[in-house]
Amino acid sequence: MIIDARPKGHRAMSPVTSRGRAWWPVGAFAALALACLVAWATTGDSHSDLEIYRFGVDTLWNGGDLYGALPLSDAGIPLLFIYPPFAALVLTPLALVPWTGSVLLLFALGLAALGVTFYAIARTLWPSADRRKALLVASLAITPALFLEPVRQT
Image 1 (cartoon, rainbow, N blue to C red):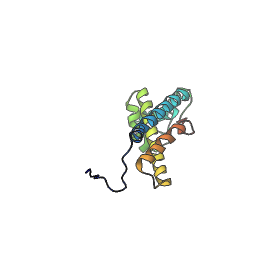
Image 2: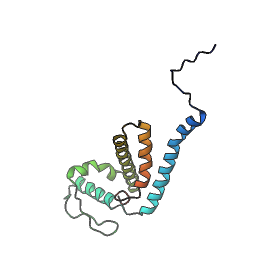
Image 3: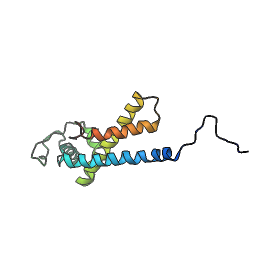
Image 4: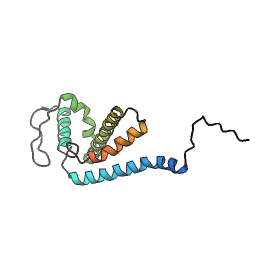
């Protein structure tokens, strides 16, 4: 006689179901990676927000006037630091690494902020969903958000 120790009403997962659950994060990550590459390729080299962050940090640490004249941007546009002085302290890591590193860091921070925001929205609007479903919704929402304003330009 074989005794089934599983709780009453418990169903064993079929191999197809368990494989499907294992692959959805891979698919979501692949879609996000592709969207990141396309977004990166279509936004061009304009990172004026990052330029002003770095100019402001550099000016603050060199004892200059944070709200005075700053160097011209790569596009030849005069930019103003309009953020509170505390922002220059918080943004210091972006000025300590080389340009490419700061671009990648800012992009990664933006993606993380989008992910956390969409996750919070999914959990709020869909309270009956478990964490994995909310994470799936958030990861799928990031992809189109990369092409919408203001995310696309910043």
